[in-house]
Amino acid sequence: MEYELPEELRLLKETLRRYVNEVMIPIERETCEGVKLKSEYKKKFDEDSKRLGLWLLDVPEEFGGQGMGVLATCIVTEEMARSIALPTRGGYFTGPNVRSILYELDDEMKEQYLYPVIRGEKKACFGQTEPDAGSDPGSMRTTAVRDGDDYVINGVKRFITGAGEADFIQLMAATDRSKGSRGGISCFIIDMNTPGVRLGAQYETMMGDRPWEIIFENVRVPAKRLVGKEGEGFKLGQRWLGAGRLRHGSRALGVAERCIEMMVSYAKQRVTFGKPLADRQAIQWMIADSYIELHAARLMVYHAAAKADSGEDYRMEAYIAKYYSDEMAFRVADRCLQVHGGIGLTKDLPIEHMWRQQRSTRITEGASEVMKMVIARGILRQYD
Image (cartoon, rainbow, N blue to C red):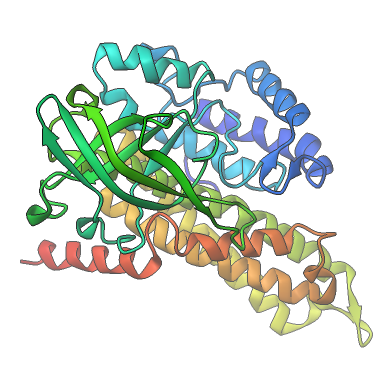
């Protein structure tokens, strides 16, 4: 069931598989408080990542990282997702989460923001979603109006993960609402302690995390905090979200594989009416369907990642991989839960956690229905 990986990535996958099986799975119920990694385990995992040669794996070499590319990052994410030892959101085994937007900063701003994030000295959050603009960023109401050497920003962002701990936000705001996402959105770097920026409501979600609302009231931001050119924000955001969608797909692979492993093991052990569950055709078909779908999803994710690493346009493949993998992993987690019956509903097993997380992924970073809409648009253009 293996995609033909280059030798170095095959070895990476094997190393991580052993580490997850031998180190993470045995302690996975101890490592987190909610979705926050306990400090002692964060220190341990950081040290182990450096010892295994994985630290800053996906950070370009010019910025002090290893620059191993998208496929390598997908493999790490996939293997780590086989355990719930790391939080699903914000848990990065290879170092800080460095959004690609930060690589677009000028030299002065890189010194202020990019390098401190890489060194772990600062944390960032990303602000695009609003009360009335989730999957449709072109309808966002947060505005940035030019006033001399500044922009004045007003609006509200919602469901912003990590806002409470962030030092700055990568904010998307409308500089020309008449243009929508086609040239009307710009990206700004804004310190969270800037006058007029304040945290609003905090939401407790089914995933266990607590994202924030952020309110901007007449926030004055120097024009030099604009990333790139005015109107380029949507393009910058999509570049980061494209990689994020592949991370979604990769995470789904790991979840699905762990669920299949558990499903098979339990089906062989559990006896009902004188026979193991594994002898029941209904259970066999659940296992077969899950394995087939995982195989298809892995090919999609790896193919999209390989295109990304070759410098080709991989957006369509990322949409497809994100949609199919997230839907697939939820189905597999649901089957795994069904096979385990009552014990699967308990927190003694990681199934209920994975089920909840996978339910959320069908909405976050592009709802499944929106992914299908974008895929359909691409197909319609392809056959013009």
